[in-house]
Amino acid sequence: MRGYRFEPVFDGEGNELWENALALALPETDLPVGFYRQEWDEVIQPQGVSSLEEYLKVARLGRGTRIGRATREKVWPVFREYRSQLTERGKREYIDMIRDARQLIERQGLRLPYRAVVVDEAQDMSAEAFRLIRALVLPGPNDIFLVGDAHQRIYRHRAVLGKCGIDIRGRSRKLRLNYRTTDEIRRFAVALLEDRPIDDLDGGLDDQQGYMSLTHGPKVEVHRLNTLAEEASFLGRYVKDLIASGAAPESICVVGRTKNVVQHVKDSLRAASLDIYEVKREASDNRSRPGVRVATMHRVKGLEFDHMLVASANDRVIPLANALSVGDDPVGLRNAETAERALLYVALTRAKKSAVVSGWGVISEFVRRCRIGE
Image 1 (cartoon, one colour):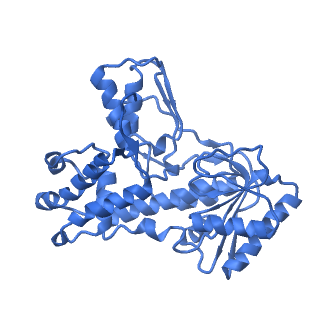
Image 2 (cartoon, rainbow, N blue to C red):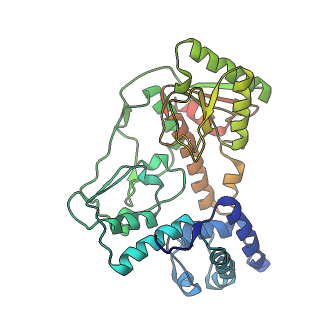
Image 3 (cartoon, rainbow, N blue to C red):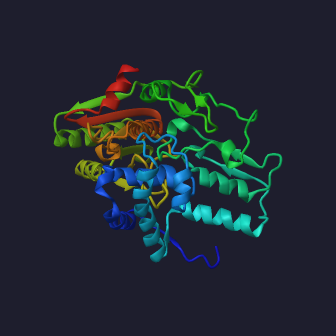
């Protein structure tokens, strides 16, 4: 926007600002440090709370830690300080920038030259993003087309379309045929989320009934190695065998949950004299570049490959221990675990022909669950 003076805040900067703001946290509240960021991400930001008065009135649906009026008054200075530090540095979170854009459109009564908006990966969009989408185009026939699958929600954003001004009543359709993944991979991955309520993006619940794949292939392989070095040898050997059997290196992708795991994968494949191409967050997968693809599990969202390998699927890595650090909030813990399950679901279902999971030491409980569901 012309004249807009704010820039997005990135993780490193945001962590520093949170540390400064948390200096105002009062010990008598007896709330864990993780509470404040979760409250910000799940209550304050989604509902656009900008003052103590608003915070005292806002609903905290989905939060497991109950806090009364007195506690809200004590924790608010932390949020106010974080917001103040953002402003002083000319920074905004992405959701703030989305909100600012929508409010500009509404405040100035702008009529943009768009007749329709098409949205993919809708499950990972926030309520504020949907409100902006609604503001971009005037209501009318075929004004907004959305495609999303809440089973693939990995960023914990949850929105009800009807509450964002997007009415899909009687106009939604469930797509039940999977044209990418084999039925063997689908069944393995679906076991991850079988006992989790998954929403339908509009306040209801979805399920996997009637969901099927049109193709078949080998079962998902799970390889548990004893040591990190053994896994390194396995990864190099397995990828070499795939290529020897006729697979193009560019059709193979090896993913890890963390950057450290990705580095382990790169070292393992290079030790096997394999060319690699890392698909980084800020770059696209350039298929003209040779090499076996390597990426984080988050980065492969929206991509597809003939063969997927999930490396180091170990306990405390999948799910990532830090991602489950939500204090004594049982609802927050369940939501965080569901997001971690969905992340593995996404990684596995990038595969068109085969999927392999490897780990060393204690294998992830998620992988054990998948094997039971085979």
